[in-house]
Image (cartoon, rainbow, N blue to C red; front, side, top):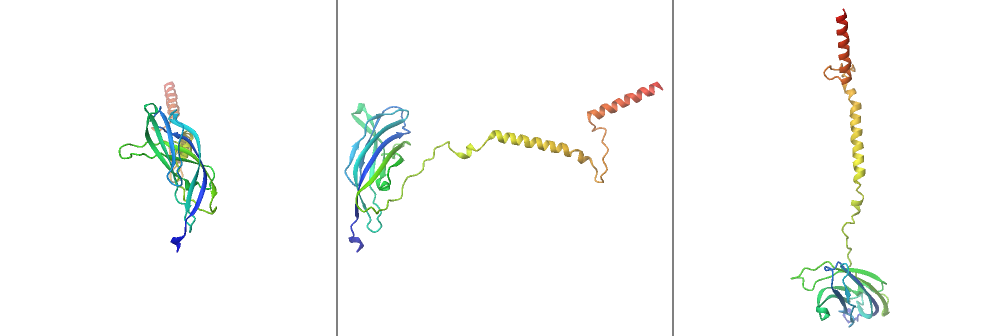
Length: 239
């Protein structure tokens, strides 16, 4: 007889703040938003009209309304309650407008969680013929229970983390200067060790030092041997 059980009913006082829209694909223009409930009420309202400044539009507009929700009587899980934010651009001096995109927010995810900030990408109305830009809408949502059983469950959050390019920590740990210094010191230490081990290679396997070759003598040895030849030649002439 579970199918005869009625769903639980809830009412939430909702505080919806329209913060800003970033990464706007144009540098000028006037934008505004329409906020309306697709479920749980008939609330609908328009934001103020603000100009684009540095590819960003800031509204800081707060809306307050009552939202009705239902939940499964067996599990207490809240049913979806969608609030749509439609972003629009003025045309012909405000006489008409074009729809840039929208964002659907499930208010059931925010029930009883206090004030929560959420950023979401805009979805396009005509995705087949136009390419949607990566504009990010920022809102702040707070909900408090007005009536209903305080024991309920919220659905899992659909929020996804947004990675900002250029903030990879692994790149910050790479120090090219230190790597060059260490490699140069390592190479110099290797050369020094080779210079130190070179005289040892002149030893024979029997342990007797090998006689140096006259052709491979150092410049100092060549100078001294030449000097000795000159001295011996002079002594022979004196005789």
